[in-house]
Image 1: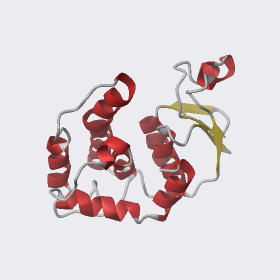
Image 2: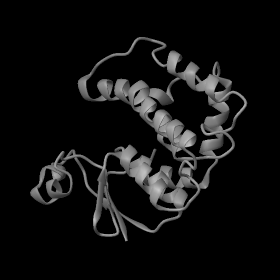
Image 3: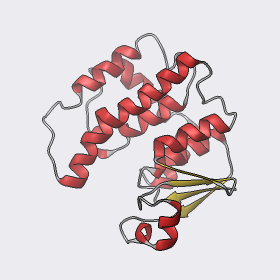
Length: 193
């Protein structure tokens, strides 16, 4: 049985969506960083960083960091979400890490450090994403993949959710397609987002 340690309101929601897309049975082990659970010795043995999420797969594979967890799940389980060629692999990893730097970094700086962002802070990366989605429904072309999950979950985060997507018609259409996925709804129900 796959166990996912985390609070569904943490980055674990990215992994919940992935698990739901793959249709894999899993146990969500509620683990909160806010009440000190992630600093307890038992938890530190599975993630010495003291952070969630952590995935324990098949009892002997432990993966932490939500992007790494999703990449692991896509690679290990045949659900059609893994990149299938070296070109797709490069694109999927590029988009995943791009989202971490362009969206997640600034959003976390606001959430953790009380930083402020200039109005329109997301316009440049949204423009990049919009251009890339021109003429294609998904980040890897005609098929939904782990890259779409890893990038799009940032639009669930409150700061990015407030951005007006109307000037970015390709992103807006992509976001609507993502929200229509049944696994997206399952993730939303579990996380309360």
